[in-house]
Length: 400
Image 1 (cartoon, rainbow, N blue to C red):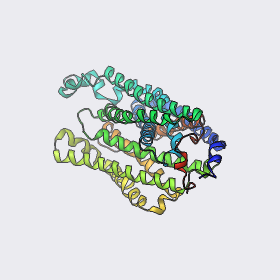
Image 2 (cartoon, one colour):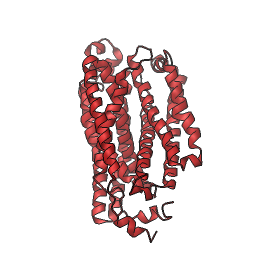
Image 3 (cartoon, rainbow, N blue to C red):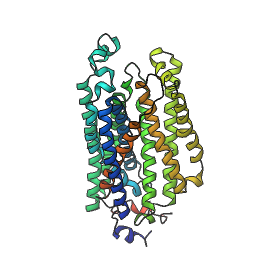
Image 4 (tube, rainbow, N blue to C red):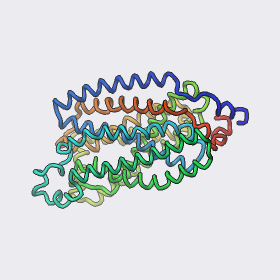
């Protein structure tokens, strides 16, 4: 390491030109997609809002999952997180524009949530009982609180990280840990409430105590999948080609396997709890998703969100091959969207499998805008935190 350290600390860690091309392409996709979404809004508002909810939640989950992984890295230390810290920080800083992109959902409450429609609440004892919590004003105020917490955590960690670049002060590590420790607790708490507010209450008579932790597990899978894909992109270009190497992808593959197993455990646990309880108000949620064609989507999720990736990620050789690992990550990223779609859309489909063109356009359009925002944030900092005191430990074996 001693002969490499001066090079690591003094070389130019600016983003490669290819990142600009990726950002420009993403922006073009996002703009075209936004035009199509606008057309969809005027042609069918109900389809627009349900597609927008799933697409927006998908990209939010990647940003929030990145924030959580960043906090885990600050608490656990280790060399695995240093090469990707700037990726995680950049993804976390997109939470502010994602908060702006949340605004259209405020105009679709009546289309998405039965509890937001007075005619549906009247005479429904369950909705009347829950109206103190489930009403538009309380829903909006909670959303504002969630974003304030997430933004405070993301920008506090990002600010200390920037100051570390400027000063190299080793004491900043402790400050970031002091933010990350309570931050993870707040993250789990707010994610649980947000998943209930935004996703679970599209079926307002149904509830699950496992729903928040299921959503958290899916965020881990989505964030790690995106992380692997962008890491592969950077690892094939200067200057990160000498930093993101085989052993790092092996570490990320192991983390992806762990979160895939956690997501599966949470999903199966929820199913077993609901099924063993055999309460009509709870079982109906799975009835709608295991009939009318939706059962084939559920089977695809079981096989492609867990079964196949689990078997593939058991291979040490695959995890050490960045190209093959990226294919698994890409599959899981797609299936993460399918999982969200399967959770939300059956509430609006009257028990029959449906897929609108807006359901496809929304995640692509929002994804184009989000990737452009992510690239813009990633370019504002050096790609490697070279003044971190643990840099030597991270590359102690020469990066291999």
